[in-house]
Image (cartoon, rainbow, N blue to C red; front, side, top):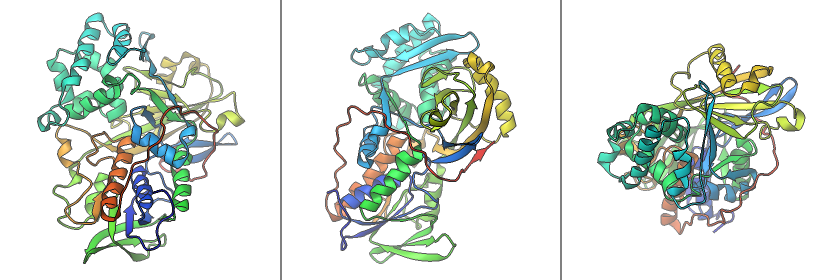
Length: 486
């Protein structure tokens, strides 16, 4: 059922306008619910947002962080189709250049047209950043992950790093190969993550289907791809969206629910509803919910930060969409020139975003200290940057970007339903079976919508053709910067 909400249907308040809340709101509206979305920020999109920045007299669209997705992210890709923006993304076969700046050696992690896991054989066998023995032990361990029961509690309590060490994988092979995948997908190195969630990433992303690891990214700012597009769709569905409105508490009232919120002026008010979906980060969920709603506190989950270092040069220094590096603070470097709109006004310039996951070391460092480290690091990876002029340099930070999927963390990832009827959870931290990714967030929102559908009718996840994503035109958002330092 796709259409406007029913005037006499049941009502639901969804707290949180990130991807989880948006997916829940769209699914609930499709199922006939009267939906109200409450979001404390002045925009939708959660941790995937954009703002504009003036650079030498030009307006440039800046994403708070570089986000990518894989072909296996079926829920997220269907979400893009539901928003009508799938054409504003591109999906490319796995081919990641990896540079060792100390030796200038370059490797490539790419797939061949062979069935999994043979599609990676040539890439791993010829990976020049490791010795032959290191390649062999690493490849053998990656293949062994196919047999790991990722849903086992005992497996979740084991460290991925310890498991690799027990199989004779040298730390150098972990640093130079395995953590290229682990840090990017789990926001933590192998030593700090659960074997169960690591097995999930490798099984679904690399070892089951040869195309699953293909890499996608937006060709427009994330604020346009997610927040603006979702706002238009929610409006068409008759969903009420309350921005700059913070939720303070959620309490049962008979067989209904009351959500206390504060409007943009700070004035409290009560929203009544038949159901509530709490789609906020794990550290906020416990504070909102009534006592006894949850078996354990999701606040016991720890967080892991991400920073993005943004550099605009007066000339092109990177000749491909992205690349990775090893043993360098500049983990991944992305070309943001077109997506930011800079190419339309200054085609000779280039805008690079350096994405740094597991950024505990950097999250509180001043911009000057980050600049002193990262500009030389980029120059080591991209020699053309040594003679280029830096037009602008700034940093965006997400101190609590994701939960940390450490050993034992699965116990604090709760299901959609709480102990109280009509009260549901959503968010990438919930028990989706996925790490804290855009895919996990959308899956959680759909799960909440499906639970609502059981109360009022039927919810079906969108069924769309997920082949042939192509890039589209660039459009810049108009939002105020947040969390940016220069």
